[in-house]
Amino acid sequence: MPLQPVMMTDQSDDETDLGLLTKTRPKTQRPPRYKVLLLNDDYTPMEFVVMVLERFFGMTHAQAFEIMLTVHKKGLAVVGVFSHEIAETKVAQVMDFARRHQHPLQCTMEKED
Ligand code: TYC
Image (cartoon, rainbow, N blue to C red; front, side):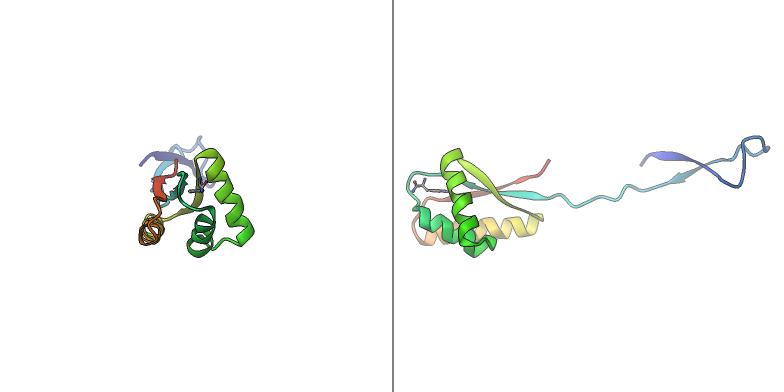
């Protein structure tokens, strides 16, 4: 952790004591966040993807439809950003739901920059 010089307000530099001290200021770490990505494919029905986005990502029908179309046109989209544990759970829920319905829909996660 970097040492930061701190100027004391009650001492000036012309005192024998130079008025400088070093305090350690531990950097507080924010936990990393993870983007959950939905990938396009040629077979999963659009209505199924909309249902997934409503069910697991709390989107309205209109939001879900818009994001589904983005994935369809661009190939993928970020559908949410979460802690590692929540992101992992979302990916598992989507992958399990898709598998149970025999759709090849893919959902992945990646660490945010
Ligand atoms: N491309 C699919 C189709 O035309 C629809 C689709 C959208 C599939 C988004 C996956 O993540 C996806 N039926």
